[in-house]
Image (cartoon, rainbow over all chains, first blue to last red; front, side, top):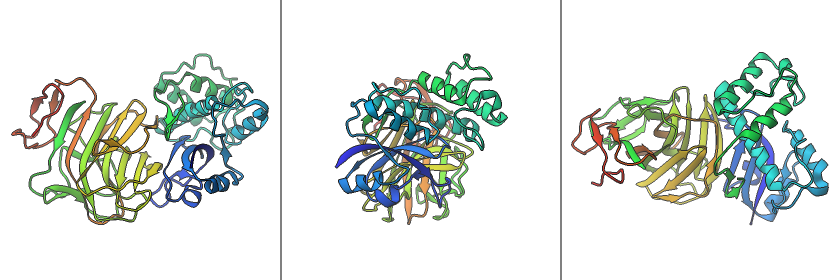
Length: 194
Length: 214
């Protein structure tokens, strides 16, 4: 058994019949302890579990699952483009990731963004990536409701958004606010992300 | 830790469970029967918080829980924190299923997300405990952590209480206690008749250490 981190879709509509949960939890992790960190109303999560080799093979074989290496202290190195593409497919800004960063630093950056998106869920009850919204959408071009989500969530968390203008992209905003997040004891299933 | 409210539920039956308990907005209602809390309808999720405690950030909730269910998969009795109307809360529930019988989840404006499933055998009458401090959630059974803590930033404040996840067989919650992590010796409000010789709504001062010992 090996404790591993995965980035994967979050499925379910949040009802009793279909609670939101990590994709493949029921199919590949049945009976296994696991923990997820969701990206609020966005359909993505980090999942940590102590998995068998067979479970890891099954999970990593899914085209929409990104398996992080077991050694989170390893640097991204030559996998930079792959890592960035993996994040961007889930609407997670990735231009801040460098080859010299450890995977733990990357996972921490994702986790902090997820903490922001979680609060956004509670503050505004609306997805940030509403229809037509991408990471490259400028703030001034966001639907008014999404502008409110970003603004109100930042204010609720006490993060500084004074540097944002109408031309600032959602990518830049999300990176800026998540970089300001201070989450004591940030972790997932015993994986230290502080 | 400081106890902010307790309830032994040792009193006449209530249908539904009466003030200071209030529903968080789930479909179901709790009832008080035979000196314990149980569901009004086993097929309905149900969550109640105490209004004897104001909306606060850091808190814990614990209760003595029992169930006849063993299906697993996130059903059974439990406790909740940062509970508020509009179906908002974190909850810890369990039954006696052989795997994944414990579940920590959050409901945000009615949308439910499973944060984790874990496996641990337990005995009817065990104490379920859930705390949240800042963004850290810790679940315990009889004072021992059920795995690692969890980070979540969705809900920032609310009240402690009780929760039930359908559809489980006979399930009860009893001897409830909610509190915070402030220094002991503060004034607090009694949630209900506590068996401490106090009446509903009466103010009491907790001793050093924050807990009464029967």
